[in-house]
Amino acid sequence: MAARHALTYSAVYDLVKRIRRHTGLDFDLHWCRHTAATRMLRDGVPVETVSVLLGHGSIAVTPAVYGHLTAADARKAWKPQGGSPETR
Image 1 (cartoon, rainbow, N blue to C red):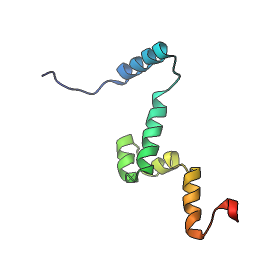
Image 2: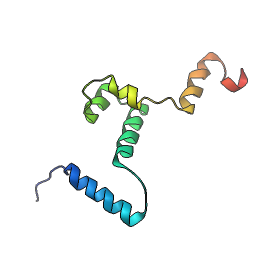
Image 3: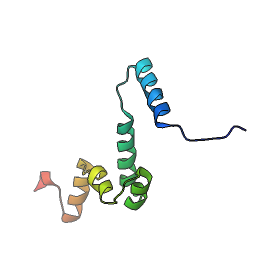
Image 4: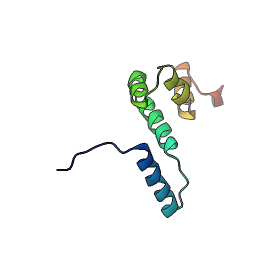
């Protein structure tokens, strides 16, 4: 069995460039990182864990950059208070 190792940054970057060229899709790996971090936080993964996985030097960076309030979050926050912004 061949040894397994992580891809280098340049190898991943080259792969993304080839995928973009062949598919015509305009995407960036940082978008994937951002989406993954946001999903982990929304799915309840502890912020400390997400921070370590992303390699942040400070835990405060993670919620500041990836802790977005969505429309669904706002609706959920209004429910315990007996309504929504539309009904007040």
